[in-house]
Image 1 (cartoon, rainbow, N blue to C red):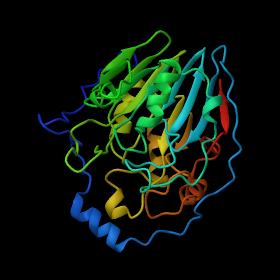
Image 2 (image 1 turned 90 degrees about the vertical axis):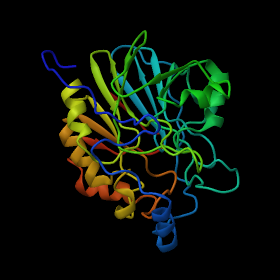
Image 3 (image 1 turned 30 degrees about the vertical axis):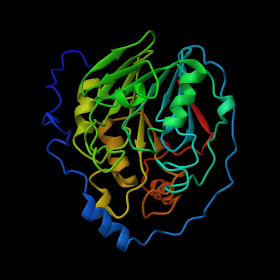
Length: 318
């Protein structure tokens, strides 16, 4: 947090029964979802794109450099000062509760499971299947016993599967770790894993403070004034990880997902030195084509400050 700056607490976002987006549009309901599906005209995309060059991250990164590897979708590996963070990990074939139906991956993960280095902390932004993949989380827990950081209400799901240790954070709460501090910050989204549990658990982004550096992981979010509030509370991030996909049709998606133009606006509001695009290129979750977000971002992004990585590609920041 910037010295001398007094920032009010984040707005009330729980009514005692369900969470909600304060002073912002709520996610569309079942009738609108049915209307979308009945009128949907998805942009054609290849069923599978075999263009991923899988890479092997180093076992550790010494010193103060930050190495970021895009694995797929919103799954990134952050390595700095011997400390490893994984965001919203998914290696499964489908982002779905069912093995034979639901969004199927169109690209391979950029890092093979067996090449993944030790993971110290896993950040989960919310409980949707493309962000909270229980098969991957169970395998991570068995592989190396990382700590799992989740939004309010989500810990029960993990603990019920023997996955832990789990730390729950509400917006504005923080978790000090040995080499970093994790802060939960607002996002404009919703939660559900079934028909009857909508908004029973929270959604969030995270600010990671480590090595005198601020990294912001937005998770899933619509565009809103929370970006200005996050900058006011933590200062300009060295790096922002911003979603750009699953945005069409706008009448349905704008309350929960940013498009590329929104992400560029968020990049400027945050004052991020660099941003990296996430939430695109692996699962086709909405009507735009698989690689359309990447193409549109390249047309509106500010020079080299907003990066688009391929699955498996890394960048190192000082």
